[in-house]
Image (cartoon, rainbow, N blue to C red; front, side):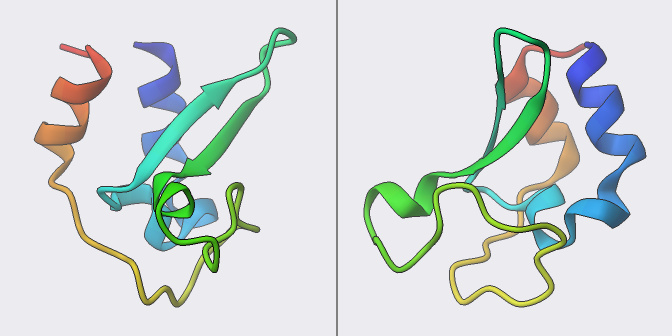
Amino acid sequence: MEVMTDLENNKHRMGLCADCHFMRTMRSDRGSIFILCERSKIDQTFPKYPRLPVLQCAGYERTHSDQRKAESGAE
């Protein structure tokens, strides 16, 4: 999947979000990709769209890349 390839190539730009369980990618109608923090849905102290790279985060929970690929539908 193109989005996953782009994200994997740019992990250094994302910081902790790159492999966080709560990170979801959002694509605009114009093709731009944004990083959504799903922690923001349950705790408003977390920004919905964090400024990248995120270097520290109290809500960070690591997700393995194989699990992330399965969640995104990539093979």
